[in-house]
Image (cartoon, rainbow, N blue to C red):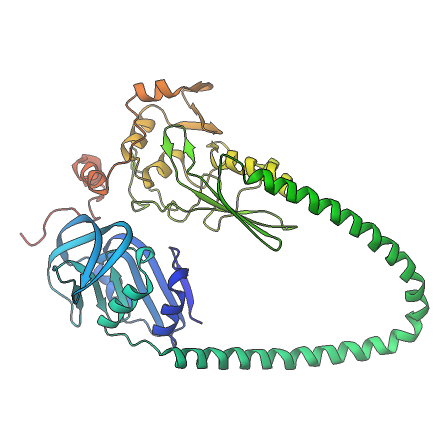
Amino acid sequence: MVEINSAIDCEHLRGEIDKFFPDVNKVYIFNEFRRLEERYLLQYSRAENEIYIIDRGIADVFVNGRYETIPSLKIDGEVFSFAEPVTKIEMDSMVNQPADFIILRDDDGKLIAERKGNCILLPISMQAFNSKLFNKIFTMLGFTKMSEEQYFTRLLMKITMSGLDGSLKDSEKRLEQSESHMKDAFNTYISHYKTVALYKRQLEGMRKFDTEKEKNIIGQIRRLTRSKYVDSMEVNGDQITIVTKPIMLSLWNIGQYKLDYKLNTPMPTIKRLSMPIIDSRVMVDSWESAEGVDGVQGFHINSNGSPCSGNYSEMLKAFWMSDMLTGFNSAIKFIKSYSKVSGPYVEYEKLLATFGYYKDSKIFIEKGKVKEVDNGVIYMWNSPEVPTTIDELKSWGLTGKKNTPNEIEKMIVESPMGVSNHLTYSIQFEDRTV
């Protein structure tokens, strides 16, 4: 199985990736949403035993770019529809086309993929691909897919050889341990015999405790299914997965989140289901870098989905005590809370910007920035003790409405600060062919 290092969720394409690239060491999938500089294009194309896929990216030598929203693609007379309309990057022409550079367009002349060597650029996110579209595009790019028989034969051989090697080592270790235990068995027999009765009594008490604990958890799960915050829930053994309904943070919809918790583990995993719509490197107001926003799941949740225990010990304590109801409700409060003082993974204004609330983000900074959000209630630095009302937010010009990618590009390009700091690099900037 190919090792995949991905900035996006592409598990639904795992089988197809394995069949197209059975002999590579690793497949890197980057979420760029911008131009890929020519030096990186050449570097990635020459990589040995590695494949680089640039999700929502195009080569830097393209000109006259724009965003487009499309419901489907038509390739060789066949229509490939998306579950929802997708935003794609469209380019008209190239300057100094690199050697051996493949450009694919659909029946309507729209850009669908580019390739140079081991570097593939896709103007549409792979998250919107189904297996059939993935197969079509990568076959047209010149890659060969293994047959099902070849794939499963190779996979079975790999599993068999790995299992055999592991069994041999395990047997050798067990033999060594058994010989050691045999030498000590006679001397310890009497001691073990005396402890049997003690262990039996302990087991009887633990079984009774586990039965009561199970009843309590079942009752909590039933109550959770009726929660106004729960969209769906799945229980698989000791693994509980809960998907929230869209979460509102005052005026702003920050999308749905998925919470996974395995009983008797240190902490839950919390990940958002809504992807940011703009590159994390888009700047706001002071034009300081927002590096690190991409992949961060929340204000105090890192890219792996691990919550910061120092920010909300109440939630973690509830899960440790198997109090699922309190734990989930605390998790909702945790997602909707923010504190600049306690060191978030990302500032409030910058996370709003990545979700498309770019204009609102800039207004916040002009008003003095957000210091703290307590379960959706906002406190500003210039008035840290008094909560800011929704009417007051609206009076500042905040709308809770997302800006389109084109509107955001326009705001960046038209800003003198944006030009002086070279922030017009994304896709709409001066035509260098003139």
